[in-house]
Image (cartoon, rainbow, N blue to C red):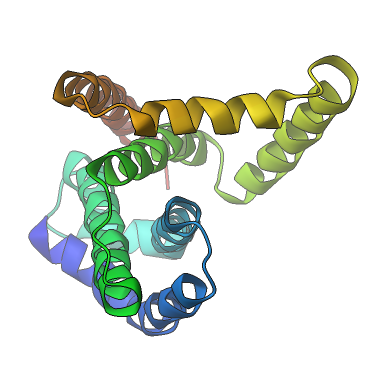
Length: 202
């Protein structure tokens, strides 16, 4: 399984060489570290997932001495590795540019949002295909915009205030509860994806 993760990293080498340095540019422009951490992590993780979606690739993977459980598990573990690579780049960049250390709250919240997204995206992509994820995202965005414009006009402000409220807390217990909750969601998604993938026919 370790080799599968290494394979994903090697296949992502070109995009990593482009995106990770680009993080420094966004940091220099003063873009929210949480925002770029979330976007870049999801982009890299989903690109790695998409690379293995071709029927020929799946057929090849299933002829190698790896179980389907290991193939799926490598994606979930690889997603964590990619997320930490992005966050490490942000931490280093933020220190080099602003001489500031990121708050633990920002890191925990960023990781939590990324892992929750992956927990939804991976089972969806295994059941359908990741190309339909974009369609689902667009539909969700349209529904969100309708809600914001017609029903809850200050929804964006409420979300920002909620995030700021969470970040304002300096409670280890709060972060622990958040980490455990996200961990349960992630593991549940992991097991669900294994079940979906094990039943696929290529």
